[in-house]
Structure formats: C-alpha cells, structure tokens
Image (cartoon, rainbow, N blue to C red; front, side):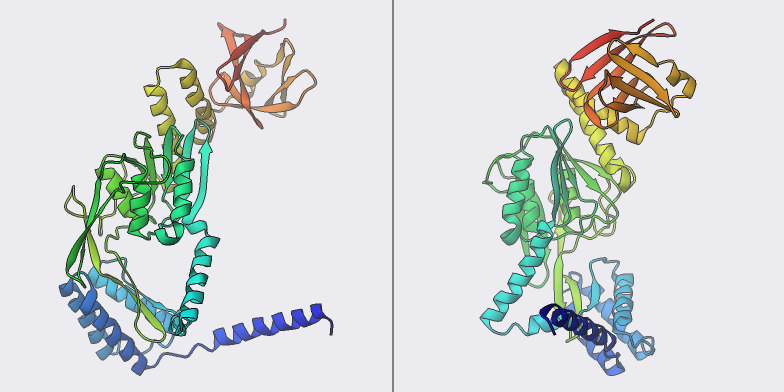
Length: 441
C-alpha cells in the first residue's frame, strides 16, 4: 500500500472513530443530575453576584429535581439547555449558562505537568490567532473614514500588540467607526486599552466593579501611556446590535456616557455581570457572574436593559447610517470647499445603496448624444458612457442629473440643462476638479 493510500485509510478510520465516539455519548442518569445540580448550586451560592437570587435559583433547581421535572431528560445537552433556561428565568441574567463540555473539561484536567499547561495554553492562543484576536477587519473607507470590525475583546496579554497596530492604523483618519454588531464580549483590560487611544493622556474614569467572592471594589481608568498615536479629537461611531453583549456593551456604555461616541444600531443584549466558566463536574461547566459594573456617571449599568443607541436603526443598516452621518458631519464642520468635495464624493455611492434614484427611460434617452470626445448611449434600458474608443461604463444615477460610472470611482458626470434641454456634460473628478463638454447638435 503506497503512502497516499495509507493516509486515506488512516483519515477514514479517524473520521469513523470520531463519529462512533460522537454517537457514544453516555446518557444522563438521575444520580448524575443530582451531582450536577449540587455542584452548580454550591458554586452559585458561594459566588453569584446577588446571594439572594442565587438562593432562589438553587432552590428552584432542587425543587424541580425532587418533583421529577428532569426525570425524563437523558440527553446531557438537553439537560444543560434546560438548566440554563431555568436559571435565567429566575435571575434574568443572560450571562448564566450551563454547558455540556466533557472534551474541554478533560483537556483541562489532563494538564497536570508544567509542559501540559504550556501546551494547553499554546493551543488556546493559537485558536485566538486564527481569529486574529477578534480584529476581523481594519480599513480606511473613502472619505478617510476608519473602520474596525471587532468581534471580541481578547486578553490584552495575547492580543495587545494587534490592538495597538489596529488603533495606530486608524490614527490618521478623520472619523472612526467601531463595529461591535457581532461582538459578544471579553476582557475589560482590552476595553481599557482601546478606549485609551480615544482620549488624551489625562486619566479618564471608565468604570467601577464590585466583586462578590472577594467582597472588593475595583476601578478602571484610561492608561497614562499607549504605544503610538492617540486620537482624542477624532469623531467616533460605535455600531451595535441585539447581539452586542457583555464587554462590548461596557465599551459602548462607557463611551456613550462620557459623550465620546455616537452609538448607531440596535439596543444591545443587556449583560453587565462579569465572571467566568468553572467546572461543575467531569462533563458540565457553569458560567458564574461574580461581579457587577457600576458606572461612575450613572451609578448603575445596562443589566437587563441593554445600551440604547443615539441613532436607532436595524443592525444591517447601521454601517451605512454611521458612514453617512460621519461624512455629513465632516462636510458641515469643514471650511474648505475642496475638503467638502472630498467628503461629498463617497456619499454618492451611499445614496445609490441606501436611497436609489429611479429615472424613467424617456428621461434617460434625453441624456444621449455626443459631448465632444464623450458619447452617451442608451442600450437595453440602461445609460452608458464612453470616451473615444475607451471602456464603456454603465451609468448609475445618484440624483436626477448626476451619475457614477460602474467600475470607475475616480470620475463621475453631471448633465447640465437650460430649461428642459440638456446642453452639456460636466466631468467631476475625485480631487475636486471639473471639466465640461457641450452637447453636439
């Protein structure tokens, strides 16, 4: 058997083995249910942020177990889901969850030696790297608007260098859009680091926390030093959705109450109790909220209510809405005409996408003809532009007489009229320049 055949057979056996193992999930017994509930109950009673609510949650689980409500559940995953629903029904706390994770627990418990722990940590960090520590996309959009699609607030110890690079990349932009629509939370330290780039060097009080297990309070402030360039005066827009949760909500809530950012999108998920996952048994884990945020400005937090945006819109429309708002604000505040034209340029494509203009065939045909070396033609219900023997571009209207060229962003055209007659074609360039050709007879 050659090497390739051996590899194929081995791969098949591994796949078959994984499927068999997946099918061999040990069914849940009533004894295990009791053990799981006892363990979860002790951890909630000892650590959950509100002791009186912990007591109610544990009592509810124990009563249901005694009354046989869980008796018919043999699927461990179903049991985890049911317990999560029961706990959240009492607490209204979306952070609390039970997970069935025997593989993850076994991997943790098998890390006995220092070498095991290092290998486990390396696998964890490697997984973070594959997702670029949550920094999904960083780019400069037309109009010099910075955009950061941040999917998680990863641990600064591992993700700090990536965060610093991203914030420095955005430091020369005229506005920054931070997209948290798909961000489920993470590390408060990463919130602190990124936020520090949006303020000056003077310390700014971001948040307070109370931690029940240690009965202590902590504070977070912006950092006195960051690597690279801060952007304290750059307008900031934060995009939110119903899926924006936990640390992503804190980031939004902090900036909103510090009046440092404009929030655009949907009201967030409503989880303000930090904590972490702990092993309950050899097959089940519980995420226990052990602290609560206490904002220094509002003296409260967003638990159960979420963070409401300044500009409410569907999550899918939030980027276009924020982008439009940023450009229009820059135009309004600019005193230079060429700079206004620079910010105006991207708005044309935004208008086509968000508020398309429809022009009837008769009106489109009125634009056809020769304009010096430029020719406008009407074909199959569409208008086209061609200069000499050059490329023919489809024209897309963004007003009744202005068009972008599909596939060419550096040049647009405007038709000029006298009364109801089209008399000239004006070329518009992305550097603010213009030229004009009269329409031929």
